Length: 134
Image 1 (tube, helix red, strand yellow):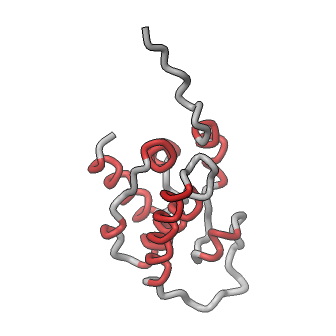
Image 2 (image 1 turned 90 degrees about the horizontal axis):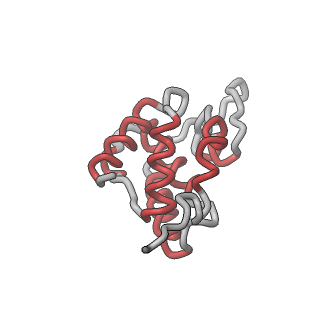
């Protein structure tokens, strides 16, 4: 996957929202972070909603143990910079509560829970199997 492909997938998910995201796009983002230490371009996120979604995705996915410590700190710093750019409305008690408290912090009504069954097998460093060199 090229950086341009990752950016296109990330932008599509962030602007459509997690409710409309597909598992293949989420898997692409997760594998890029977890196994390629590849970050999407967050400067493409110009709207508040896109920043919320993108920041949450980065924040949530970088917390897995397969992400190296230094890279995790880099991703969290980018997520924090997105968070600081948000204009967050007062919490509405009638809003649907997300399953993920991190999603609530980002002001989202949905999270990554529906994708976890599909992406968790990739969070291990053994996800792609051992390569035999003959």
